[in-house]
Amino acid sequence: MKLLYTFKEAQALLGIGKTKFYELLAEEDGLRTVKVGRSRMVAVHELDRFYLKLTGAPLPSAFLPASSRASVAADQVESGDGRPSLRRRREIIAAMRAKREKAERRERRRRRNAQRAALQSVA
Image 1 (cartoon, rainbow, N blue to C red):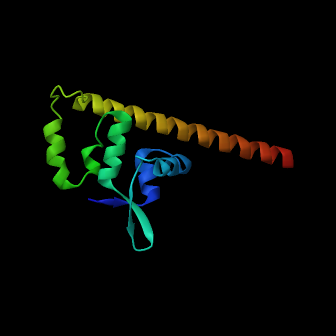
Image 2 (cartoon, one colour; image 1 turned 180 degrees about the vertical axis):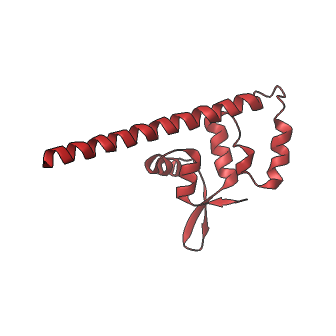
């Protein structure tokens, strides 16, 4: 299990673009980074903190190190602390995934139409 993610991996994990990612880094209470050699990376607990702030649900346990999974498993039972239940968190994640996939389909369609228009203008 990874503890550190490159900026590109973190962007993909959160489902956000490069511009938004760098805006988050610039915020006062935004994502904090760790320097590893000449590279900057984002720790998984920082991604979890941001994701919790954004959605109200913790990062899915598949992305967390094994030591953190036990605490996530314990929190999966709704305890009245205002956090959504496991079912609701899964629904949130599925909705975010569907939204990202829809945006990707829209972008592919836009590019395909632009290519067709370029080919027609050449002919």
